[in-house]
Image (cartoon, rainbow, N blue to C red; front, side, top):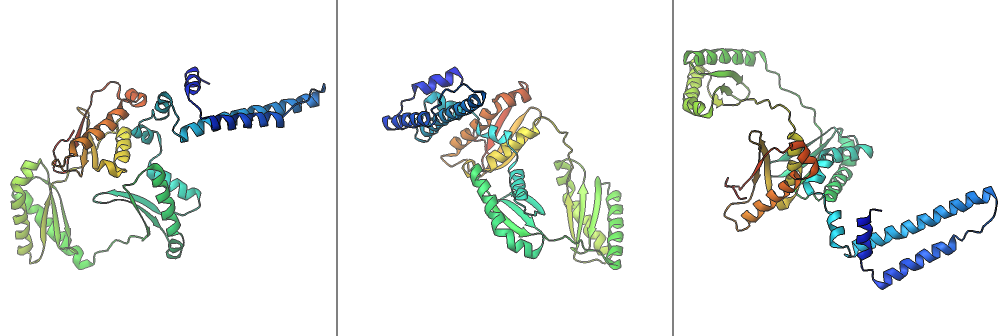
Length: 349
């Protein structure tokens, strides 16, 4: 045993009743395992075996003492510090994701899970889908119970759990008339966009929804400057070709391919840890790579008296995590900042 730990254990004051019970238990173990001295190799083996039992009994008694000290609040400050030295987010980082933990537990118990997903919008929810109507009805309650139990064990109180029946998705197939309408309108709208010299990269017509999507290429300023004109031009095309009731929906979507970096697993731990507990009121986590900035969104209004305190607590959790040895090694002394925003988009830390 480490000398420091031994010294701390020696300093712990043991209640007389508990001390006496442990002594009696150890004495009883000794009495039950008295070993006669007999000069034979077989007896020596038995003797060694019984000595092992005595050692095990002594160790068990020592473990029992430690457990009793811990549960009865008799741990010294140093020992308590040792026990709680792993930061909350650090423990999340070192563990499998909650989705993996739930899936593997259900799989180990023999449940056939078709898919799992989670949402972090207005309601944080884990959805577990099971295929087969009869099988779904048979196991749904137990599956939900297991998932909730795992969440409770982790202290994740922000989630609800929904178990639903998996439905095969069948995409609608356009008929010949709809295909012709789609092809014609896409061609005519593209011609109009080129004629007006608008920068775009996609025109998509959905005749089943009477919608035309036109994706504009460029920054937000450019998009806003032509958005209304694009909508007007699209309506002109539909009217000229006698297709009534269409909605023109200009979009400004860009696909950003982020190269995997060393921050991704750190962000994942922060996401799971903060979003999973109600007390943090976190609704979103993101980061900017250069300079490294962690951005936390919350549902707390900046005008609430507790807003600043919440911001400080969230920042404290993240800082404690980022200062752990494992994360310091990953970041390699890279500087970072943390921004905790309120619901009304004001910094509260």
